[in-house]
Structures are given as C-alpha cells and as structure tokens.
Image (cartoon, rainbow, N blue to C red; front, side, top):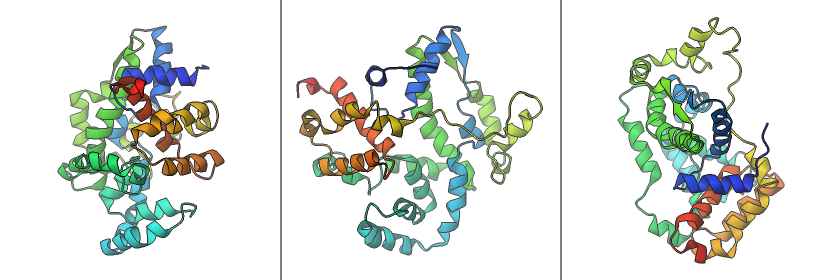
Length: 310
C-alpha cells in the first residue's frame, strides 16, 4: 500500500519522459519499480504477452463489432458527415455509433486512440491544426496494419500493436520508470525465438471464441496450481477518473485553464471546458483526454524554450 503525492509524482515523472507521454500507468509502474528495487536489482516482466498471444480486452470487442462491417461504406460516411455532427454531446451511444460506422481498421484505431480523430480535433485551435497538418498519427499507424502479411484480422491487429503500442508505449514506459529507480528490467517473452514462434501460430491458438491468450492459458493450466489462468484480466491502471475529480483536480484545472496555458493557443478553451464540466459532473468519462492535455502542458512547461517565462 502506498500513499504518494500525486501532483509531485506526476511532475517528477513527466520530466523523465522527455516527451508528452499520455499513458497514466507510468505512475503505478514507477512505484512498483521503486518497491521492487528495495529487494532486487533485476526483474522480469511479462511485456509482449498480450501483443503476441492476443491478450488485450479490446480484441474481443473489435471482433464482436466486425458485424457492423456489413453496413455499406457510403452509409457510414453519410452518418459521420451529416448526422453525427448534429447529435448533442449528451446523446447516449453517440461515440459507439460513430465507431460502428467506420471500416475495420479505422474502427480499431478510433477505439484505442485519444485526441487523434477528426471529431476530437475540435479541442484544438485552427492555428494549431494548421501547423500540425501533414503529421498524421493515424496515417503512420495505419501503415503497419496495411503492411501486415496476414489474412486474418487478429494477426493484423497483433502486428499493428507490436510495432506501435508495445514499442512506443509499453516498453518505453517500463524502461524509463524502472531506470528511474535503478532497476534493470528484462522481457523474456520478447526473445526473438518466442516472437518468431508466436508469429507462426494460427490465430485460433491465440484467440479462440471469447478466450484470449488461449494457448498460454492451456499450457499453464495445471503447471501453476496457485495461479487461476482463467481469471478476468486486470490491467495495470489507476482510478484516473476519480483522481481528476479529487486529489488531482486543482492541478488539472491549472494545467488546462491557466493564463499560461491559454497564452499558447493550441486548444479551444470552450471545448476543453465542455469535457472538463462533463467529467466533473460524472456525465461522461473524459479522464484520458484530460490526462493527455495535462501531460502535454507539463511537458511544455518543462522543456519548451521560454515556457516558464510565459
């Protein structure tokens, strides 16, 4: 059990990332590394297991929503362009309908990304969007999906996540947070022989029915009697939504609405205010969007030339 000062911890960790890093699980990763370092100098992780053997909860969600691909592409475009913009933000199911109207690749990227789609870009100012034109994150990420040499959907998604989420998020986070505690971390599942073995497996041995990591669970069942391999997956996350209404609320308000932030001109204050109010009232959970804007502003204050003088 730990009781960290969240504001101080976030500021401290942001300075170590050297980039706007939007994964809030860096906080528990840092603390578990700090505690482990009190006992050992080297630790092993299971990083890569979800990407190699289809372990994320988002995979069954995506497979279940493949049924909406029977809707003609032109009908989806009409909904997104002509109907969706007129639905009030309070309309329940608005985000789901938008997601269901997309093609397979775009639907997955829409579900796993934050502040990347056209509908979320309304948070940013016209000047900022103009300066960022041509730096399309979705286009770059989509390339890996298109290049995947696999006919089935699951294998394409695993390849996409291995080339993007695993390398740019998971491994980056664990490396920075563990090294901040002088802890050496190794990922045995990412040994090239294990990766090559997993890549050659048929998809039904990774994801069967609604059972993720099918082969790993079947292999471990009975070999590790103290481990319930069929228990519900639990991510390494934090109660971010509650913290933004509690201990982190004042810090978040300053980072989002201070004169210093407004002076930069990269967001539309009224749009940010809307998601802030919706989150604080509990109407919608915008925790990840708010967090991404927070760490961006923290990074700007730490690294942007002249930022502290603004």
